[in-house]
Length: 262
Image (cartoon, rainbow, N blue to C red; front, side, top):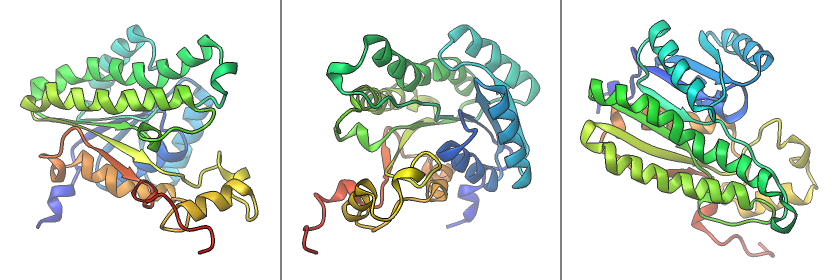
């Protein structure tokens, strides 16, 4: 098997919200395989800081300031990106939020905010990028799903509903667009070591201990652990993989957990 199957040279990848964390790790992975990187955010300072971090890693990231939930702006900036950078070959719907609020305490507006960013925005982005992919006869869509596509957990009802919906949207994208040589798949990360999880990853913290115990790999994921899966789903190596969610979770979904006395 030739490694050319994984070569992304000459491809352009738009990764939404890739100014930090898992999105940035995916973007760096795609860049390492040769892709030209485009990122967006709604905060200019985050874009500037991220551009410097990419530059330090030897990557030039094209940055664009727009809101993925605003269809009018998405239409405007998809045209702008394709005029200034080139056609978008790979779309990674990474932008997302989570609000940890019990169902009975969550405001309807909060619930809708999560669904709007985590579920409606991927629909908007794909709707306005896929026509170009259809015209060119190829394209890759990677939707950032979650273990919450499969499991429930206290206080994450909106997030789980959105990610479960995104899993099914991914399957429908695959169903409608496979005939155009477009593959739509998802990545479902487990628990990863990021700046956001740092406060709960200290030894002795109950949640840290729970995750280490619950994960067969016995550790939190490193953001770089996502790079290989992203490259696979963005490359020719996955041309006959469609409508799937690849869970990168250290084996959590494979088991009910280790015995307490192990």
